[in-house]
Image 1: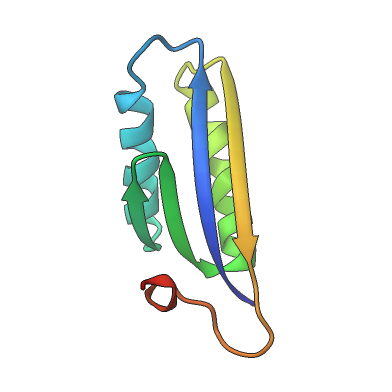
Image 2: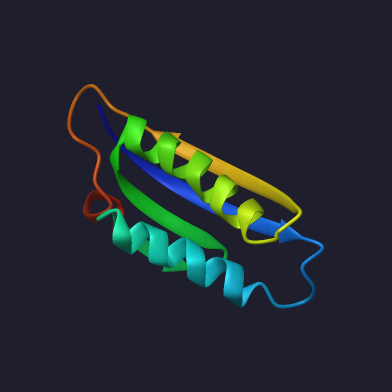
Length: 92
């Protein structure tokens, strides 16, 4: 099932800048071949629902393994039955 998602990952207790952690998130998105767009407060992702959910788990595991003690994530998912959801279809 195709889906679009908005993902916001917040490393808690990492200090003021979270650039390093978010850069790792972007790298993993690129490595896994997701179509995505970053924005000021998160990342929009297009892909298979199962792959997106698996990705969120892998991101948490990776960041914890690399030393981030606490993570808070917000995930919004959209699936449709009338057509395939795409990020391009969200643009005004």
